Length: 163
Image (cartoon, rainbow, N blue to C red; front, side, top):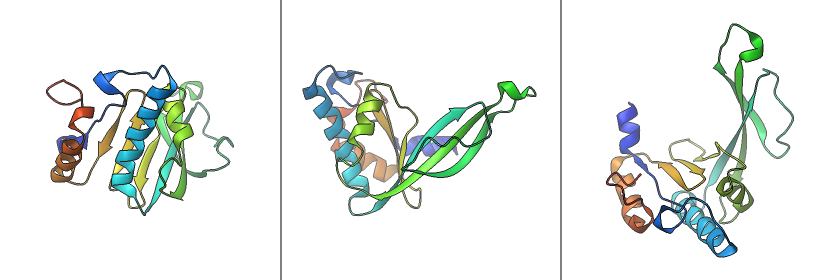
């Protein structure tokens, strides 16, 4: 199944020539425009979930996401010693997709201050995973992936895989 998921993934880069980090407001504008352009194509006129992770060594859910509702916790590392267990607490915020509605998060991601964010439709069929330097886009079919990739070929890496 992993091969099927990878077949339906596209990975646009945030800046020209696969540059990883923005250095000025002009480059931040490019980063924000590229994220918002793809998200407009995927989710315009629909609601999305913005899912944010919080990593912790405690099973208790931390009260750190006032705007997002707690969704679930995952035991990521089940060490026999409780002090070395790792949990990922997930918070999900449902909102109507609007261009620019999470630009502040995109800037924090671009500066590697936030990681692991997921944006998905409410059926969780299409997933957008931005990171510093780009984004992974998981789509429903290889055909949808190809159409998305073809619209943004100049945003892809020069590597043969486009990654």
